[in-house]
Each structure stands twice: as structure tokens, then as C-alpha cells.
Length: 272
Ligand code: ADP
Image (cartoon, rainbow, N blue to C red; front, side):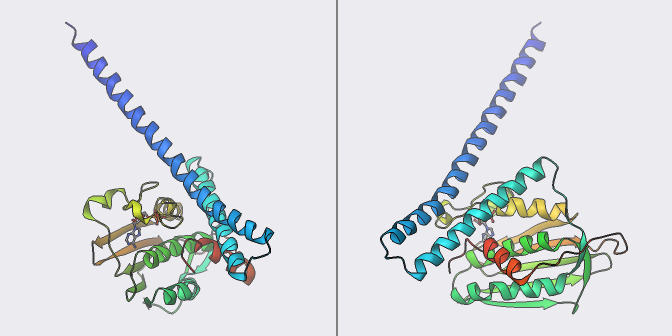
């Protein structure tokens, strides 16, 4: 009777196939990372050439700066993914007025929205709402959803940001009238380096944005999900707990300059 041997052989073959698949994913991951590093670096080097020839314009310098931010964002995202994987990622719990923060973030993207001839509107159930969370993490979550909405919505489209509060949680959503996500790609959207359409690789598309966003939401004990229809638009939802506001928490004050720089880094993959 060789049943046991046959079963063991089948298990070993299956494990070998899984390892091969993982190996390919790791190779793809590094190819994508290399590409995402190379593109902004090439642009910066070209601008340095212009500087050396004394023909560098203010626009070239702005492009150089934006690409430095892109590199900064990529490094920040990769470091955070590594920290999350290693279990070393801890939010800095503080009081956050979520409504005020969303309003700030909408203002921060207004120039990009106008540049693409889009409209943005907001709808909040309250004027202010303090939750126990981490304003830096919330900022990155919302900016990532807003920048995707801007990136994947054509001229004339509409973005709507809403925030509703129930007894123990807030639910915010970023809705767009953009190209939407095809039904057969919906499952992979939160995977690392998921890019629905490879032609979207025209800017520095790290493709890790939503995977990281999901981990960031989970670090705040929240949930993220979306609804989308190809050709109609997408609606991304984030639910965050209000949590016990009496627990001991720190508050962080950022200067306006620090805030502006962070916004520029987060939005660096949108065209100016
Ligand atoms: P990327 O850096 O490529 O935008 P993300 O992880 O943020 O990476 O998103 C993964 C993919 O999901 C994108 O490449 C895009 O195809 C799709 N996607 C994300 N947000 C939207 C949206 N609002 N509308 C349409 N497609 C989207």
C-alpha cells in the first residue's frame, strides 16, 4: 500500500508550487519597487543636467522637488509596510477632530481638483467630532483615497466626501464618478502592487497605496471596504471607532510648514 507515500508526494508538490508562486510575487515586488525608484530619480538627474548647463527654469526645479517628494513617499510607505509586517507599528493615540481634519484635507487637494476640472463636495452629519485616533495616520488614509479619486476620475467628474457619526464609530467615504474597478479585479485591490491596468503606470504608481491604507486603517482598529462599478465610479468607506476618550493620550502639534510638506509628499504622484 503506497497511499501514504502518494499523499506525501502530493503535499510536497503543492508546497513547491506555493513557494514558486511566492517567489514570483517577491520578484515582481522588487521589479515594481525598482521601477518606482528609477522613474523619479531619472527625472531628478535630467533636471540636474539642466542645472549644470545653466538652463534650469523654475518649472524644472518644481519638477525636481516633486520627484524628491515622490521618492520620500515611496520610502515612507515601504518603511511603514516593513514596520507593520514586523509588528512594530504603533499609532500615536490623540484627540482628533475628524471633521476639521477632513475639511483641511479637502482644501489641500483643491488645486489638484481644479487642475483636472473636477468638482469636490462634502457632506457631514456634525460640525465637529473628536475621536481618539492618530491624525497623521488618518491624514494618510484620506489623502490616499482622495488622490486615487482624483487620479482615476476624468475631467468634469465629481468627488464627494461624507462623514457620518453613530454612537461608537465614524464612517467616512470618498466617492467618485471615475472609471471604476472591474468586477474581476475587485478582490485584488488591497493586495500589494495591485494595479488594475498596467497602463496606469504612467505616473509613479507605487500600487502599494491601498494595501498600506488597509493596514493603516486596521492599526486604528477600523475597517475599509468599497463599492465600485466600471464606468460609473467608486465609493471607498472607512469606519473608525470613536474609542474611550478618557484614556491617557498625547496630543501632537505640527507647524504649518511641517503640515504643508507632509501634504506635498502624500500627493506627490498627482500631476501639478
Ligand atoms: P496606485 O498607486 O496604482 O494608485 P493603489 O494601491 O492606490 O495603487 O490602487 C491600486 C489600483 O486600484 C490602482 O492602480 C487602480 O487601478 C485601482 N483604484 C484605486 N482607487 C481607484 C478609484 N478611486 N477608481 C478607480 N480605480 C481605482
